[in-house]
Length: 603
Image (cartoon, rainbow, N blue to C red; front, side, top):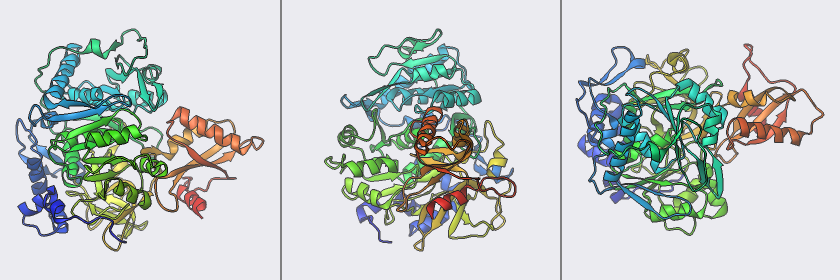
């Protein structure tokens, strides 16, 4: 495979990775990675110093595994609140830039953001919320959403994050699991010329008290007991941070597994250090950079963007509209974005339409791609949009707090491949017999800072550890991804080994889709699979059904399946095809053999 980008001397010696190599007298990136996993305590202690993490009481030890690697103790004895590490620049430094689809560019200084955050923290306290009480956020990624998120954690209130694209049913499920005392939402979402109701979905989900941000000029009547954000907001702009321990919960995010109900994954006070570390080393985020990633707080890249940006003393760039059109391209240009994150399906649209071809994106130092498998042709096109800049392929998970396999700016960049296991972490690829292989299922070798150690609604050990093989006497942690290690030592994504899939960058389980499809009168049973296109790229959804009714036209059945998936789960999920089958293939124990169904479709 031929590299598409090589680091020059200026990029190499100006990188955060190179500084770490010099500090530890290491002469290659590979030696740095080896050192980072062989000396985890030393690596993470130096990383914490590099990131200027602010402690009220410093840790007694970086890592203790006396209770086993499943229950590793990080930064034991420390006292801090990670939000304090997000405000360590000059007061007039630009912390955030934002723009809606029809407006101009707005800049927010660190002092302005901090005072706004303090007002919201005071508002929570004045409305009776105590440290430990959960609040929820179901909003687009706006200035207000970022400030509310920071303010709640600063006040000691864990944040339940919910994607604004979810249906009322999906919102209801997440609220039932977490039971927040208050939910922040927006009246309407204004995107791509459409006005989409959001507050109405929150009401239908039977949410508790809602605080509603006005997104535009549309009229909105509130339910009794709810209030507008402007009436909720305190005038007091000073607030004393609530100090936490390292294992205190700050956020609850959701990730689909192989059962219908999503896993509720707590992020502790230490997980943002993993986010910031990946941003510092692998994305090379430096002070005064501008980081943009079209995302949402309901997905891990929302909180990741906040922590990777602010802790690294960079600005966060938020565009309120859809990232498909010229408005977004102009925003990236005018905001002088230096690191732009994408989901591959967005890049496919840009390439097919040529929408971004006329903009000057030369300020970009690197791109990053995550959420689904990418296509080399599209990633090469993306590199050209920035005048030949590398794409940091980045793959991880909500329960990891960042990536386990990624790229760097100090290695040659080959489109749609990962160059390295993430610094400070290690994994192994195993085949079905549990032997090491160059193409197989990925198992993490704990401990790694950022890994979850509990679930709110599941047995953590059962989900991630039970039944796993061991490797050279080491405990392994299940994740579900399949990878291929290439002859040059790089890696390529090979989809999921379990029943989960990525659709448009959103992780969802097969069973979640099958549960709603099975509600249809003509469906006896179903199986949902995702198949990658021949040239690579994001998974496409196909649904197999055993039909009760052969009188209904096939096209009508597909239309009905698409409608119920859109209405009950997510309007972004689209079934590419519907295949009728006499019986679903099953194992002796009765489990549907989705891998066989994928193979049948790809033959």
